[in-house]
Image 1: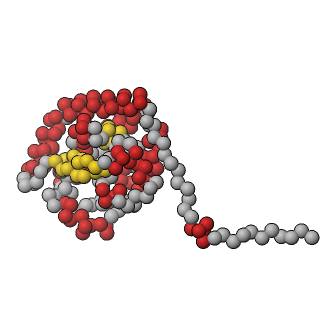
Image 2: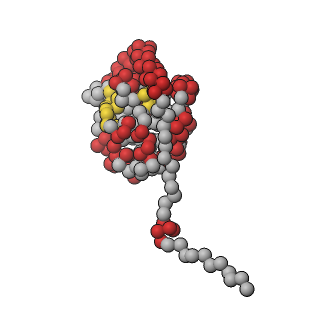
Amino acid sequence: MKLPVIAEPKTEAAVQAPPVEKKVNPNNQKGYLFSKRCIDIIGALTGLLVLFIVFIVIGLLIKIEDPKGSIFFSQKRVGKNGKEFNMYKFRSMVSDAEAKLAELLQQNEATGAMFKMKNDPRVTRIGRFIRKTSIDELPQLLNVLKGDMSLVGPRPPLVREVNEYTEYQKQRLLVTPGCTGLWQVSGRSNVGFEEMVELDLTYMTTRSLTSDITIICRTVLLLFGSKNAY
């Protein structure tokens, strides 16, 4: 008589073992990286020259609404291989926005290690406009010239966000961060944190000059009033 096969009971370690997470291998071909840097420098210089009047107008509007505050906002971000740098933006919030953040953390509308709030009370009137049109991001062209950022790449996270990253999510930091990327052209604030990570890792492994140029073109179209920016 054939005896029934009895499966061995799973150990506690086997039951609780997390799924194996894939290791990402970014496209770091020398020819691509050299061409990408050339495009970054040319694109950033061209953008700063063409948008010079926009910088002046936005700066005046920010000062008129809040004379005591600064025009630009500098925030510590985490770049390639965990290196920290100061990222520049037009100030879109009240002067003491960082101090008020702790009061709003429980109202976070984003998932994972990000803070997003659609009706953030810290945002000024001109701030709502420049955020809606992504004009607040334009000073990051200076970061591109410095080499801290690229025109296209994963968005540079805050230090407090990286502190909550898993080892898998930290792979976002293997390449130079960008002003725009797959996340921005795929839904931006309506895309959850986990999905954003997957979009970034997908970009890193498949990135090319063609994909970078495509993302830049799609970003320009979104500048004219994205419904997903806040």
